[in-house]
Length: 219
Image (tube, rainbow, N blue to C red; front, side, top):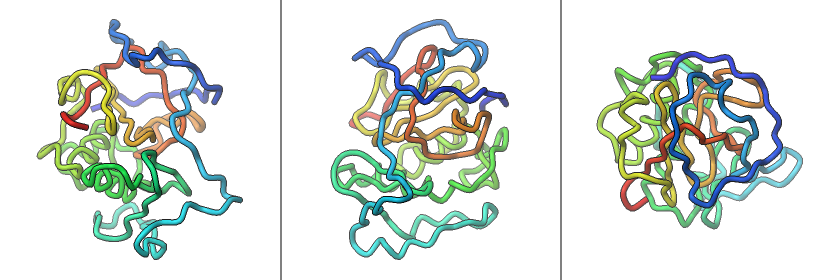
C-alpha cells in the first residue's frame, strides 16, 4: 500500500523519456525527490469539442456518482477506434483494437472515478469504499483477469514480466504504484491539483525514475 503524500502541483510541460523507458535506480524516499515534469501520453477531448462517439450503443452510459454504491461493470462499454484510450469527463473510452481484457479493465476502473483516496483501501477486497494506489492498480489487474487477490506496492514490484508492456505497464516502488493502460495513467496522485485524489484516469504522465516497470505477459 502507498504512504499518504502531499505532492505540490507541477508544470504540465512535457518532458522526454529515453526509448527504453525504465531507469534502474535506488528507490526515492518521497514524491519530492522525483523530477517534476508530466509526460503527455494520451490526449484529452476538451469539453467544448464533440466527444468521441462510442460504439454499439454505448451513448446510453449513465455515470455512477455515488462513491458508496456497489461496483457494476455490466453497464456501458465506451469505445473509440484505434490503439489509444481517450478521456472525457473522467470516463476512459477503451481503444477498439485493445484486447478484450484490457477493455474490461478500463471499463471497470471507470466505476471508481468518484471514489475517495483511502490508505489501505482495496486491500482486503476488490470492492471497497475507497482505494489507495496499489488497491487501484490491483482492481484494474483483477478485472483484466490477471489477479485473484489485491497486492501491495512491494509485491507489484515483482508482478508479471520486466519492462514496459504494449497495453499495460505497472510502475512500482516501495510506497507507490501506478499504471499506464492504453496510454492513460491510472493513479491516485493528481499533479494538477496536488496530493492524493483517489483512483482516477489522467492524460498527463509522471516521471518514472525510481520505479520498476512490469507488464503482464503478452500485454
